[in-house]
Image (cartoon, rainbow, N blue to C red; front, side, top):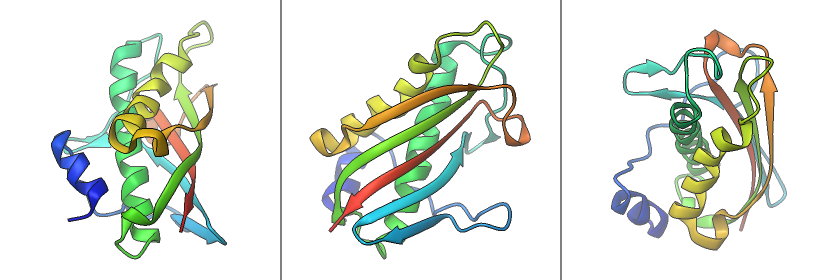
Length: 153
């Protein structure tokens, strides 16, 4: 087991298989030492996590949904690294989209669920630049979608 997967296990997380794309795109692109991971939607063992922040979901529930996106991002990274996730140098950037009402303004608190998880799991390698933006709707009605850029060796 890799050092990162050992740390994830200590946090009670086992990376799933990387989700397959839902349309005509690839789940990730490796360009030099960067891995661009397509947006990963909020989902857990029970299925997609659907909802609209500011309507039927709290910021805390949204942060939990964002964490599931971060786990899926790491699963895609592991696939991009041929199974060796320890090739990770750092998380470069996360871009988080929050399905929210027009008056909801806590998008950063929601995406903190992913950011906090990356730092807890990866230490300083998990610190990253970030955007957290509102969306009037997201695919399938999910609460959160996050894309990422990683640097690998």
